[in-house]
Length: 220
Image (tube, rainbow, N blue to C red):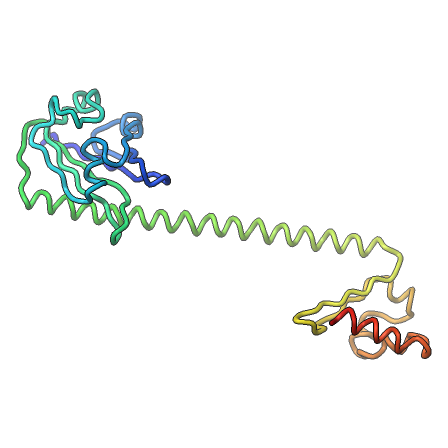
């Protein structure tokens, strides 16, 4: 009766524990909790990655926030590491409002809760990473669409004939002919698609070899 529990989570710097949630503390009080690895009871649990239990913490020098402990009647203390494999995620702590010597069964029970907390924290981390990746991909795709639309508007506004060749590993994999190709050549893009040699036949016969040589240098 009257027991309290709260969860510390390891910060991104991997050096600081911060309060995340608690059963009998206000959100302001629990999120205001902070300690370095090795500092206080929770910091010691994080440093040695083993349970720490104290029957009576009143007046103990390792109490990080005596004001919070007094406000919520924290007298005994049990803290266990929250781990995924060998990776530390935080510390789960529990307290009674009276002096209490913790048993092996009580330590094992809180450790089981810590294992569940570790799974929840890891799932939340993976979800957040996936959400950020999806947001980045969505932004990249939107930027690509905007770039393609800008290119389309530019080519549509140009009165000269724009001929685009797409290359992969030095090989031609596709060609695109701007809307001005009909006015300039008399042929539409479908004509060039149907006859791959049409472009060179439009070149004066005396210039064809030099044009082919120029194309070979570009592709080299």
